[in-house]
Amino acid sequence: MTTYVVSREVLASNIRQLKTQAGAVPIWAVVKGDGYGLGVLPLAETLSEEGITHFCVTDVKEAEILRDNSFTEEKILMLRSVCDRREINRLLDLKVILTVGSEETARLVDQIAAERADVAEVHLKIDTGMGRYGFLPEQTDRVISLYAERKHLAISGIYTHFNCAFNNEALTRQEFAAFMGVVEAIRAAGQETGTVHCCNSAAFLKYPEMHCDGVRLGSALLGRMPFRTKLHPVGYAVTNIDEIRTLPKGHTTGYSALWKAKKDTRVAILPVGWYHGFRVSCQPELARKRDCLRAALSAVKQLLRRKRATVLIGGRQCPVVGAVGMLHCAADVSGVDCKCGDPVTVQISPLHVKGMPVVFRA
Ligand SMILES: *Cc1c(COP(=O)(O)O)cnc(C)c1O
Image (cartoon, rainbow, N blue to C red):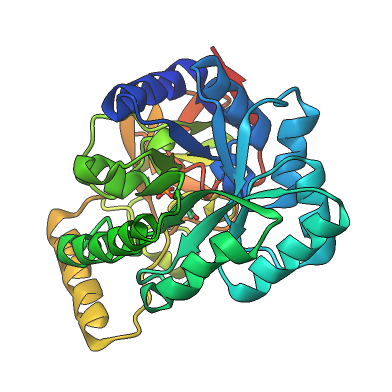
């Protein structure tokens, strides 16, 4: 059976490395998207074993999983500015810190907390460019007045979320300056901002001066960043060879006949395809002309480098041949000591993995 294997030790070593880099600044571990594909609970358990006590979620369900599984004292921050009565009530039951990114949410959360004779702990969200949740820096005066006006909100933090930390330093610095401008204005008005945080994984790794009072890390835990790091990729699929064939010279494999045997070729057939997340990546939006140009350039680069996908069989990296199908692919195993049923290691990002059980091992 094909399984997705996660080494606790590799994950733990990434966490330790990130903790060292964070120094005294707490890591708020992001466990959204079912723990980036690893499962909220097993990911959170490993984080907890390594001393992480702060978590971020984007779904009520994720908070429930944590609270139901003895994560009772940990801080949990909801990253969405929720505007649904039932969700807000449930999150308050679960003692989750809410995000307030608009006047409407501020009013609603304040009102619900009042009805419950409660005080809702919240972090304010500032929109410095992402253009999703948050108050604009131009609305700083309104933000400041929330501290006094909303008696049932305990504002214990303020944050922003960078949109280009991985590829645009100038813009990120500009966004950081805008964010700190809001923070300073609030302080100048005599209010306590609480925990100030803005870094996601990319910003954390690239700009230590922006760590502030906390950092929100997700993808770095997985060790798969779009730039070079010392982190280790977490997770890989293990499957078995279904069939071994010798395809005669001139024969093809896979849809569209993209590969043709130049000579008689020994090929292993594997029950893994794009459905499982193999060779799946987030394609950039080709919205602007320059994005199309960039994509074309990267295609040419790939063509020149001829960087083919490989899978690990019998201790050797074997090139994948032909198009990867929905559930199958083929690998050239010429000269590799292997037989039907032998194990195969396939690199798949946990973000894309699907259709196989995720197993944590020591
Ligand atoms: C997903 C998310 C993060 C973590 O981003 P990574 O790049 O995966 O580290 C941080 N903050 C917010 C608001 C997010 O939505």
